Image 1 (cartoon, helix red, strand yellow):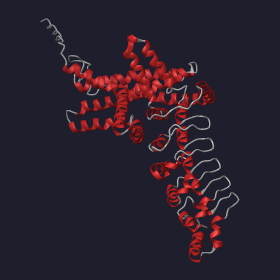
Image 2 (cartoon, rainbow, N blue to C red):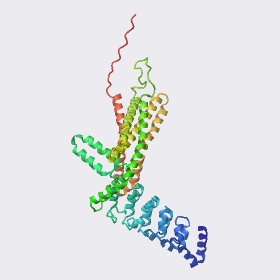
Image 3 (spheres, rainbow, N blue to C red):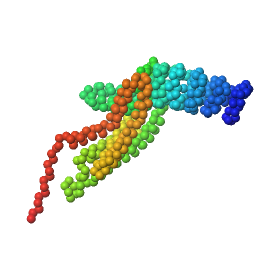
Image 4 (tube, one colour):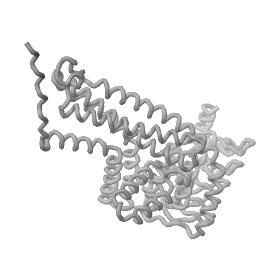
Length: 468
């Protein structure tokens, strides 16, 4: 069909037959023109050149050809429409949405990025639909960090426009943070207040705050809310109690679904936690290098004991065992219906953190165990094994680093390059310290034992000689 239409259009260019030209404006029962059907295909440009008026013909749902192309992610055709006819960028459907609203709704990331980089489209960045929502409102509502960063990187995007309900993007971002979960900012405020009240335990309070801030930074919705606050976004003018009431109603509707997710998450995480506990328990009594024979001095002791790498191996393995046991206990609480739902979520979040740290300790213990056995005979293989195992510990922070890289360009546009680099580096370092603190602590402790003052241990008394 499209091949025949292409031939007809080429013939029309030569003969300029008005009747054939009008074919491009013919509509079917849904109000769709040939350009609506071709909006996602390469023939689109030829139909548009034959009759540019087809670009401004809506179907019965108010969709123009540019909306159709945006809905399926046909970014090349969208760019072609805008380049040839810039006014088409402002076309709205029956719901008042531009092609940018449609792209956000359908998660067409490439179209959003191309549009935000095109300075000639600045005039549509803050256009609103019938509900008063800009594209930024919809991106925040979706919780997509990629779409949010693409829009935030355009300095022409207004961060403080309210929709018809009086909600700014920051209001929607706060609304998206689960109140009953671990990432709700009220929990952070309560623990900060607790740390301020207990003056004699400032260190403990700081650790608690750091732990909950660490959990806060793991959530995409919280990242969006925090970034909006950093770049100076404002909340709408409305009563806070009405805002909380709306959140409470939503949470009541989602409570059963959240409990089901909680149950599934607990079962999955418990398998990993118990597996780590089993592996580390067995490794403690099957030390690498073997044991001294019973008929020798210190019989039954590990042969490689008192070596730096071996002592560090035992410490990392012990930390992995202790943390995984604690996580298992927390998962027992999180999976029990006898415990309050909010407490179950807190136990699950703590268990998730403990399992991730114990995995880092287990991977490090494996690397040191392999090193202490291989180093005397295969130094290069031992070093390569340690370096390769380090990939496991880095993988736990891949998502964090990816998110910081996404947020870096918009923060550079809004706050400056130096500020954005310094802030991103501090966030990454803080999160890595939360993940890797046992690794640093054990290295320091092992070095203290081996480099610090030696404790003289008296040699055992020789056995008495047998009587003649």
